[in-house]
Length: 339
Image 1 (cartoon, helix red, strand yellow):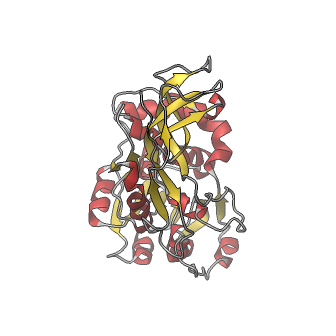
Image 2 (image 1 turned 120 degrees about the vertical axis):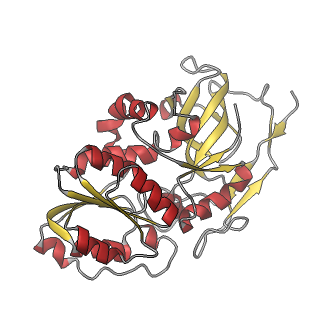
Image 3 (image 1 turned 135 degrees about the vertical axis):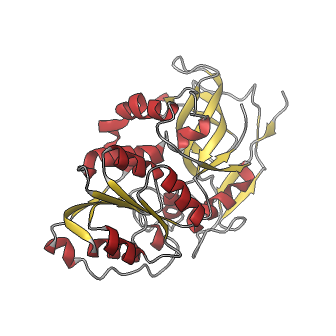
């Protein structure tokens, strides 16, 4: 077979605010690959099928001098995130052509990998397409499952609230008998969250979050990836000993002056428990359990989810912007290719 284009989405420029398609990231088709003949050197050739777009990616679009829990993207190189691909050729005895592998992928159509330990074999199941393995059955679902198991300590008839991320958390909290308050960024999203069990579901752009919490609280468990004034309002309406599960603060990702929270002394006065976490730190405790039990619940239809599919690697930049601005309705997944 003649060489084919190996399109890539490159990190082109550190953004000042929101990442701009065609500026922050650019699509490049200058490279080619010989699918049948390129040397594998003991590795395996993957065709990328789906890639995940996640809020945390904005934090990797930074100057290398700024330290964080994960390395920044390299300028001039493809973005990297969770994906699923199919093996086309392999010289690794543990990996066979036709295997589907979940792991970290560069944003390009084809890639040669040499360390099978960095990937997990996944199988298609009812209600679990490949896209689900980078969403509800991938890192976002793991984020919900691991931290809920580790930090929530849910009590029946107590109250949990979540910001506009991880609808899986709503379903975990309801399964544990909790009252759930959920905020979303549109009426459509709020309606969906009501349909999966939230007792109080509202559009925070139209309704004052603080007033909702004053009426429906106090809050015993708060799941947060927004931060800012919403976190401040929840601290003001938290029950004594409430657990705060902090997995992100997207309200500050695209601004140079994040909101300054003014009521932190209430953490002391009300003995609040603030748990910041990175999902990979809990994987050793819960990963096998997640794949053996939770993915099966999704397959049986017990866990509901929806997706915001972006078709074509060249359109990934728009998907990244959609997630940062909240325009996505469901987990954002780039569909790079069919089988």
